Image (cartoon, rainbow, N blue to C red):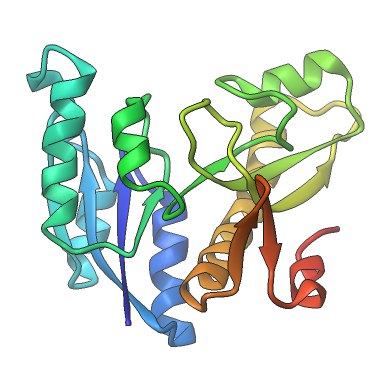
Length: 210
């Protein structure tokens, strides 16, 4: 049984999707804790309501990223995580922190990486005039939004789309994609070879791509 620790900064809708999937699908894992850098993050109440341990490491109380990350790591490690999942965690992590969880920390990014890393991805996609957009689950590395890709989900960009309408359709796919990718990890079906992710059953991996 693997332990998963989820990091959030706000509502944590992807965290909610993960919790529901883990509990309804009977994963060989448990959500051991949900940790936020903001004490007012609405997602904390959801986790508590599901009987999940929660903790807060307030980022505003630290004068630099290194001290915050050290405190966050100490809190995470109390729950002996096999996997750390970033679910709308709005902090840039230090290299030392990323290295601590190398190969066992996942993030979801609202674009088809390597396209449109960073913020305002939906605006970037609309400005670029691309025909499709989407979301990517990847392993976290020191280079922001550039880790090995686990899986992607695609949506078409429609005439008249705004940032809000495009973001809403992408979010629907995120809520399916992230549980799929995390389940692959907890079932020991992911490996990284030469900087690329391999899935033990390629047919299953392809099922999410459309």
